[in-house]
Length: 112
Image (cartoon, rainbow, N blue to C red; front, side):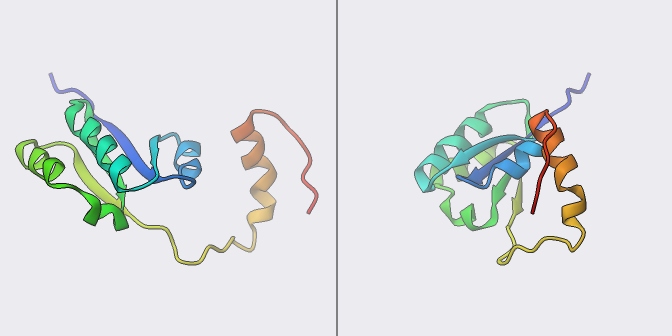
């Protein structure tokens, strides 16, 4: 019987909210040391199939974690990056109230 593997995201501190709203299990980190601590935990967990990491953190992976990943087939690393400039869709305000009420669990009125 094959087990379903889970997905984990390592994000830079302050950038985890979008992943959480999407339902992902997220671990925020503040730098190279905390990144490697969390990556080591993920490597040791057998139920994690994919670990998404910030593209710029690729160079942060220490030698211990690199060796550990070579010995195991999982997790697969998926690299992501944030856009250099954020811009909202021209129609974003139409959906803001619905998104916020679903995320927070109650209704309120937004006036811009």
